[in-house]
Length: 263
Length: 236
Image (tube, rainbow over all chains, first blue to last red; front, top):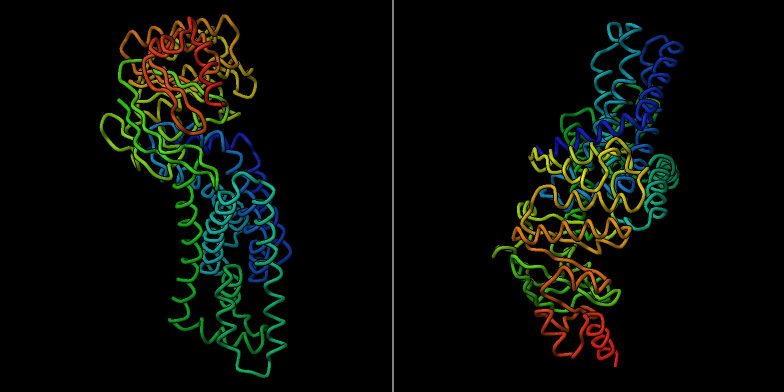
């Protein structure tokens, strides 16, 4: 009940800030352009998901931390009111994560609808991309909250950690994996490779996309390993539970932190 | 009634509250005084659940407050530095907190008029001066008619006229039988508003009792003199 009251206010405030509309527009423009140039096929969807895999973690983490700093007054005001901290935490989180996920979904889905792509393309692939985007939004907003709470008094540190983590997970991680493949190419490294992919939510999402569009052949030897593993029932469930774990841990940790914090 | 038992709070290696024992009597006004950094605000924040104590218990009306939140229905709090969401207007802020508390009181209108803020109701919080914010804080604390009123240096940013208005209001609340807890550095204000005095130094309580007793003991006519003497004694 009280969480809803908070959500309503937060959403009103976000819309007044207008940047959330801009964020949705970015996806609209990208999706529109990709569909025009990519002929509404799997190519367009692949490009959209590539951009989504970079942009969502960045915006989610940075804005998650920033938002926590921005709502400091709001938080302090409410803490002195009769409300439990858990409701307040979920109100704050939902106040940002839900609009972010909505902006992405609407921004991406709208061009697919008005270009008619939704009828011609594989609906399952479209839904998969949208679901992945929503999951990544929730996950990385949660991570951003975690950093924000951990460094509540030191904004520069909080935002710095968010930025560095993004750089690591989205850019450097792949390089490291590649390096490992080159270095230990002579050894049976399928299993450690799988573990490495599972340990990074962005990679996890990327692999899911690649498998969906059946271009894991592009990834060569490891691609085959992934394909064999993730293609099986067991693989899918392991990947899904890893993603859930990734979603749950930052949120659980930040809620704990929020409940124990001195304001 | 509020009782605090062996309350301890450490911020890192620093002990801010050192095994504090305190009873705040119901239906009376209690003033907390002490030098800067003596733990007044931390005591109040622990009472509100904003700060989580390292150890010790706080009971409001005989019930432990740890992990509880319903008890805050009974409390109105005016913080030392009033910070509110910058984009909200005064009207929206009050409506929002009313929704949070499930209340449809009209008291905020009366109080807005009383503080001559009724024309500013559509102003955003960021456009308000420090004094106006303080007044908004005072209204927020009192509009739900809570049993316990907590003011943390309430008149620090108020002009003399508003300060007098505020004190008159507190007097009225006291007459209604409210429990008032107040911190201030202005001794005349404490003298005027409270009956019970708590004097804190470095997280310890040095005096806890009726105000007139302290003045008799220190052989001073004014509270200011009595407290100054006590501060000198603790420094020595």
